[in-house]
Structures are given as structure tokens and as C-alpha cells.
Length: 220
Image 1 (tube, rainbow, N blue to C red):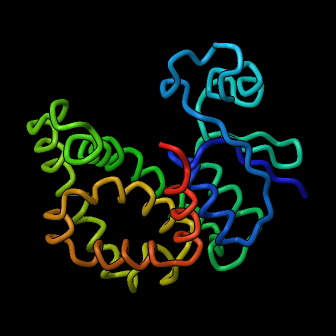
Image 2: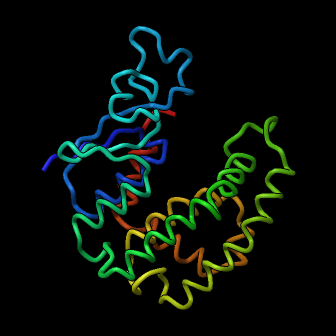
């Protein structure tokens, strides 16, 4: 078996690296940086990036992460994770068709209901320099996430602290990697204490900690 993960740690590639580590999968990591982070991504000697011809042969969409699993190429981080969990099994994987449906549902829910607003919060409360932050954008995102956080908090109460099967699964991992963008908005987590406890538990896992340490060591 030969698994290659393309992407850099300061991207959604962390989702796939975390999952691969949880599953104990050996993999080759090929660093690919986002083209917008480079002054001239097409310059001679430029780092391998999302617009490099070499990478576009892997993913013609020009996004990271992508994987090559024994010649099978797949894109989109949450889909990659669902595939790897399904292929390799174990407690992180869905145990039956109903859990497969739940894992897909929560992954799509994370993308549609939460990710755009969570990213806005991260950007306008923390990531952007102060002069580029827009309080009104952050406030709109905060308002938009109150409902989804309440939904997730209730699901965690009913699911013994998890969203599927009463155990940590790929569904939790995919969700956690989206919900973490909203961490600068502490008031959201104060209003949804089960979400806070669940995210803290997810991020306390050794595989997450190892991934995050590598991410922090990567050049910004």
C-alpha cells in the first residue's frame, strides 16, 4: 500500500493527516503550498504550489489536500477522510449503512451550516490584521452559528458526547476540524458547553496533538 498526501499543514490538509495518524496509516507527505501565499507562483524555482503544473496533474482544480492511494486520486478533505475511514475500518469507521449516512450527513452539515461562518469568525476576530477586520462580518457570522451550535450541542447530549455511535469516529474528526475555526468566538462555546467539552476532547487526542505540533513548526 502506498498513500501520498499532497498539501501543507496550514491548510485543510491537517484533516487528512490527523485521520491518517489516527488510523496508523503510513503515508508520504508532499508539501504543496497555496499559490496565493507566493509573490509569483509561476516564477522559476517557486515552491510546489496549487498552480504548479506538476500538482495540477494530481488535482486539476488546484486545491489542497489531494491524495494518491495506490494510483487512486481523490480530492476534498472531508471526502478523503470518509474514504480512508471506510477503507481501513476500525472504530473510527462507520459500522453499518446507517452510520455511513450519519458520517456523510455530519460532514456535509459542517461544510454547509458552519464552515463559511466559522472561517469568517477566525478571520475577523483573529487571523486578519486589525485594520482589515470587520466587526459587522464577525457579528453576522456569530449570529449565524448560534443555531448550528445549539443543534450540535443537543446531538452531543443525545450521543454520549459524540455525534455517531457513542464513540469517537471520522464524523467527529471532520466536524472538529471545521468547528475549530470558530474558537476565537468564546461566547459561542460558553452557550454550548457540550460543544466546548467535545472539541477539547477531540483536540486532546495524541494524533491531533502531533499534527498540530507539525503545523506550528511549518513556516507561516
